[in-house]
Length: 363
Ligand code: ADP
Ligand code: MG
Image 1 (cartoon, protein in one colour):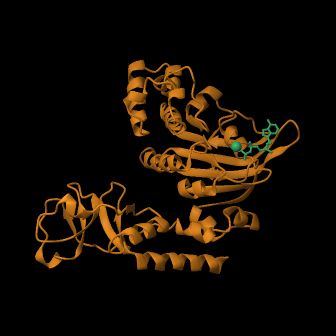
Image 2 (tube, rainbow, N blue to C red):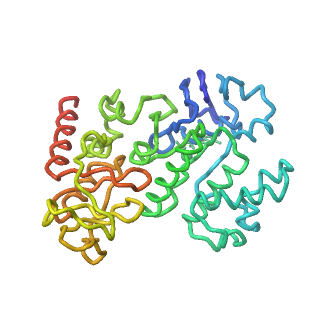
Image 3 (tube, helix red, strand yellow):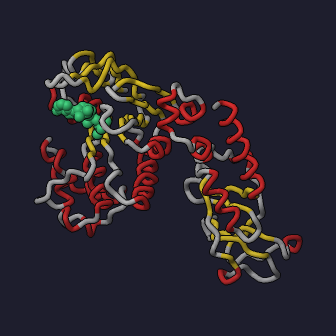
């Protein structure tokens, strides 16, 4: 874990960017620092790896005071990802990813092999390894930046607006993939963003800062949405709080209906004839809806236009999925894309309305 204890940063010009800040970023979780531009987020982050020295207070990494630890040794435990990736322009993608392991004089062959694995993990195949950063899109560079930060397998990661410089669609993809990677690696992460949506989506814990690096609120996304601690936080969350809350609720599998499903090539039992059935591939991944008939299920019989949604998806997406389907039901999958169950659009609307009402009562 990373502990901030009464940390203050006053710059030489007298400007106090961080005021008496205390919070703990728990092990294996993502803590997101969020707040308006200039409120001290970057300053806070850079004090962790001592790119900036605090004026007073202390920062502990797994109990070790970072001011009393050898800086080089301390930094090796911390992966650092910045906006625009900050790649070395004259080095190939592979050498960029290997930068820290090479510095540490780790074995070259093993480092390169691990780098290739990491590139795959962030969604870049081997063909990217020998390219230069300028030959990549912004989103691809950002992926390399994440792979590079992971290369030395550090227990801690600091990320400063890591996804801000890419367009919204790529950004969504990067966020989703990043969450998948974190689900496996469980790094202790402190991430900075000015985007409240990004904070709510990625954070296990959110630290809201206001002007002068003053702690405005700390809590889980749902706590902060349900109980903003001040007018500042409420305003920062925006007037669309109810709408954000829709983003939020996880679909418990207990709420799902177990609509019947068939695999390609299966023969539907008679009692299902003329009813809607979830059509799946050989690995039980839903392809769409089909009206069951007397013959073996073929791809041509499936309505492939529907979208499927993960159980951790949000109500807005579920509503879209249910309204777009031929029978008003959204198909829900787990994180391995396996079929879980279905939900009606009426149910989704009802739950969404309930959570909006809760929001209004609390407001
Ligand atoms: P954020 O990342 O939240 O946008 P920063 O941490 O970069 O904010 O900056 C916080 C405040 O400190 C801002 O008002 C900024 O202008 C000021 N600041 C940042 N770096 C310096 C510096 N080296 N000297 C003086 N003031 C600085
Ligand atoms: Mg910043």
